[in-house]
Length: 156
Length: 153
Image 1 (cartoon, helix red, strand yellow):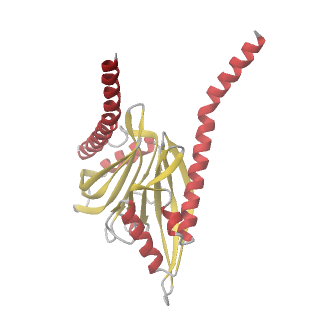
Image 2 (cartoon, one colour; image 1 turned 90 degrees about the horizontal axis):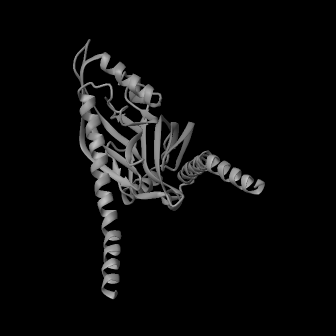
Image 3 (tube, one colour; image 1 turned 90 degrees about the vertical axis):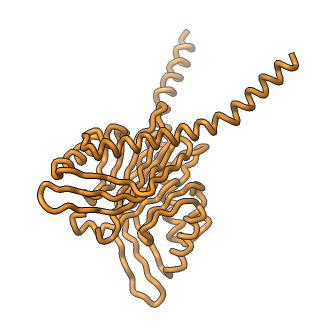
């Protein structure tokens, strides 16, 4: 009887504890995936940058007014970014993360330091939001949206 | 017996092939309906716009503040304050697109917001948007929004 109570209790604890434990694991994996993506971009590693990207990836960036849809378009945009700058470092500021169901959101501010060949350093400040979908225990990047803060100097 | 087994097998295989297609199509229609409803509510200056479909933990990067708005209540308050400053506000999606990835979805495109403020002239703002949804308990909920005005607006 005692044995049965102990087993029953363990099952209850496991059942009750599972959601928060799973949430923590998902959140940690989301943070790790985001950090790996930023690291890949800053290392100018195209393959690593593309690794977590979904085929339907949507990029809303700061170098073009037009959204880019699809992994091929994203690959081209990243390649052009690497080609255009001999130095480009993206630094997240106050990064935040949230897991909602099987969807992950990473957001915050950023500073982008860039330098073209023979050109001066240029700094851009803005906001970023990456969204992820969970597939087979992995976080897949489904959208990246960047907006510069400069236009917000004017009320809109 | 053999015939029955073949019929059952054919039915199971058929169901497996058709079900994902139906689900994908249904999900697309459902996300589009949630998106369209929010735009209709917003243009009718209804307080439920965006917050009605939002998850409690929704996050917004919008055009009214450089800072993130976090949570459903704060989103509702932001929208209400926006309405209070204007006679009318119209959000018009331009080339709206949708992508379904498992139980996540993205609605994205460009937009024009036309504002008729209580004080001052009418203004049109052009930009890009991404709305991210998550499916929970068979319902698509708004998890995140990002609106970025184009340079010069």
